Length: 146
Image 1 (cartoon, rainbow, N blue to C red):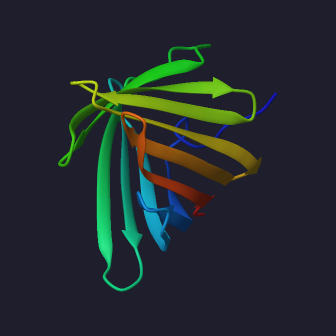
Image 2: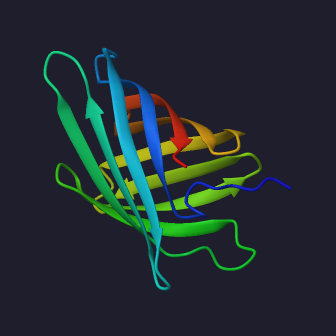
């Protein structure tokens, strides 16, 4: 049986990879994600920085309803200053964790998956859309810090 560590266990993760804007221009990306658990909600604090001509930083703070014992789905909510409140779901599917989300008004939606590569290491791929227009996409490798 696969033992996922991201989200399901507390920890600090580093991220490195590439971010693509709506024009598919690539930017190097690095960041850090901290997962912490409380009884009633889990918090994922994700900070990503785009490197290049001008550094741009993104922060997302997710509040996750903990997975019930034996469950493979959990709901989450996040506030994004550009699009407002996003509501989503984490889905455990074999070696992957899939996340889907949508804005309250339905104008924005996103999807990403985290594939377990080895213990404490995930490959993350995703996209954020407005209707049929891809606003951003990414390819990231995440590593659990000891």
